[in-house]
Amino acid sequence: MSPIDRIKTYADELTALRRDLHAHPELGFEEVRTAGIVADLLETFGCEVHRGVGGTGVVGLLKGRTDNGKRIGLRADMDALPIEEETNLPYRSTYAGKMHACGHDGHTTMLVGAARYLAETRDFDGTAVFVFQPAEEGRGGARAMLKDGLFERFPCDEIYGLHNQPGGGHGMIKLRPGPIMAAADFFDIHIRGKGIHAAQPHRGVDPIIIATGLAQALQSIVSRNADPLKSIVLSITRIEAGSAYNVIPETAHLAGTIRTFDKEIRTLAGTRMRELAAGFGAAYGAEVTVDLQDVFSVLENAPAQAAAATEVATELLGADKVESNVVPKMGSEDFADMTMAVPGAYVWLGANPGPGLHNAGYNFDDSIIPIGSAFLARMVERRTAA
Image (cartoon, rainbow, N blue to C red; front, side):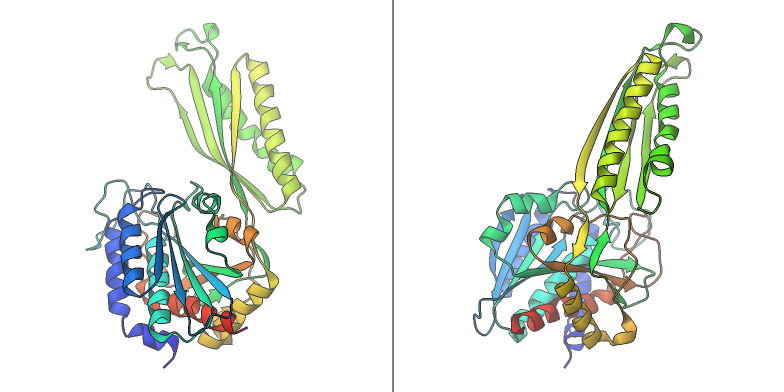
């Protein structure tokens, strides 16, 4: 029986787990319930379980038939997003303002499914290391686990992860060697002017005028400073100022992200942002400060591990279901920090069409759970034998 067919025999149980996690979403570093469920399940499978790694992370160790010294890591993320769900699903979020809108409930379930399969079959040598990571959505969960000694305490020779892709071709696995997802810096720009009655603008310093002008000027970093042959996206995602019709406020706030693949472009963008902010502050007589946070590194697939993932996906699904040289995405993923420490590969798993990731109407496609579980499990079987 193929791994996919075997996992399908308990797919209903996995689907029930996924939907329970969906109904009870937890934000980054708050995944107490989720982590507890995962840890308890791993223990029932016979894994050695370590809780509280990097905050609310869980690591499970499962030994194969023999110990040949090889240790293969598999990683899933567990956190939800601060989004109010807008579906009528029977298992919709029961927590106001929190939702699994990115499919981490599905990723967690697929790794649980892989762990169960490997525990039941034990058709591998060495050790499988199951890494359930908290706080992937911009809160540094991977870095927290690494700081807590993830790979010193639980050494891995290589590590693999995946992400669902709505509308990506059902059951398609897509990847590429080298850079596959962008680095991201989050920025906050705080503007302090001088608040005044709206009828007397000449007596104040209007932070809204500065904010709107600066918001447009920042796009010149992309269009006039960056090499046009190198990718960069600068997105302002929040503008906050004022609370009354007849008051020019004291402060304004801009926030957003800078996404790049190139270290020099990344540095340039930060430098130019600060220069433009200082220039606007001087021109208008305001205080303008920039807080730039390095949140995500470039996610790079190691060539050997990308080739191994392609081989396993082709074996499981057939060559027509594998795309091994996809165009990189400007989205970001903190699995990048793990692959900077240990060689690894990250793949996208296509799902049926539907609302996209981070959308209030998103719903994970449960039909891909056996495929994702089988792919992860097979990576352990193949790479411990390599």
